[in-house]
Image (tube, rainbow, N blue to C red; front, top):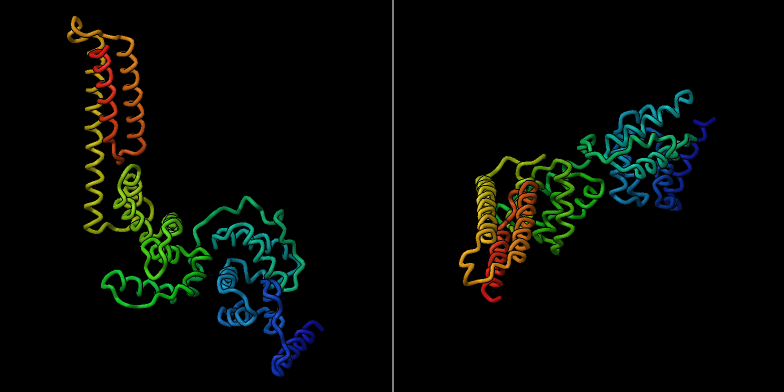
Length: 356
C-alpha cells in the first residue's frame, strides 16, 4: 500500500508540474527534502546531483544544499536510510555522533539537519539533544568527506587568484560560488575569501573579517592562511605582531618557507637575540642605580635622598621583572621602551639629588 501511495504521489507531482500548477513547498529544509523524497524516493539522497537539483528548484540556499550533501556522506547514513525498526534509534544516535566528528558542524546544525532528513524519510525517531550524546559534539576540522562537491569551483577560484597575485591577470573571481563553501566551513575557501577581503582584491577591503577568516582557516590547518597571517603580522611589525608572525610561520599548518619568509624568520630570531641583549643592559642600569644609592657620588655636594633612591630602585626592578616575564612569553616583541624607561627613572632620581 505504501509503495502504491508513493507511486501515486510521484505521478501526482509530475502531472501537476506538467500543467504548471505545482508549487514548491516553503523553503525550509525539512519540507524541501520531504518534497524531494516524495517525488524521487529516498534514493535521491544517494545521488548528489539529483539532490542538488531538487533542492535548488525548491529554492533552498546553496550553502544549505551543500550542508545536506555533506550529511549524506557521513558514516552510517545508509543504515539511517534503511530505517530498520529494530535498530532505528541506535542507528540515529550513531549517525548523529559520526556527523559531529566528520563534518565539523556544531551541535545545533547537526541536530537540525538530521531532524530534517528524518522528517523527509517519514521517520518518528527522536532527534532531541538528550539522544545525541552531547559530549560527542566538539568543534572539529571539516573533513574532506565530500570534496568532489566543492573541489572544482574552489580549484577554479584558487587558480584565478594565483594568476592575479603572480602576474596581475585581469580575471574575474566568482565570489558567489565561494561564499557557500565558506559558510559550510571549508578551510581553503575561508583562506581565499579572507585574503581577498584583507588585501581588497575585487572586494571592498574588510580587514577585521579578512583576518577572522584567515585565523579560522589557519586554525583548521590551511598552510596558505598561516603563511598569509605570518606575512601580515611581520609587515605590520610593532609590539606583539612579530611573536604572532613567528607562530604562524612555524606552527601547525605552516607552509614551506619561501626565501622572503626565511629572511623574515631570521630577522625575528635576531630580534630575540637583541631583546636578550637589551635585558642585560637593563640589569646593568639597575645595578648602576642601586650603586648610586648605596654609595652616592659627590655626597658632599649633593643630597643623597636615599628614600627617593630606593623608590627608584624598586620602580626599575618592577619594570625589569615585567620585561623578563614578557620576554619569556613573547620573546620576539620590541623591548626598546624598557631601557629608555629605566634610564628615565635614573635621570629623575639624579635630578632630584641635584635640585633638592
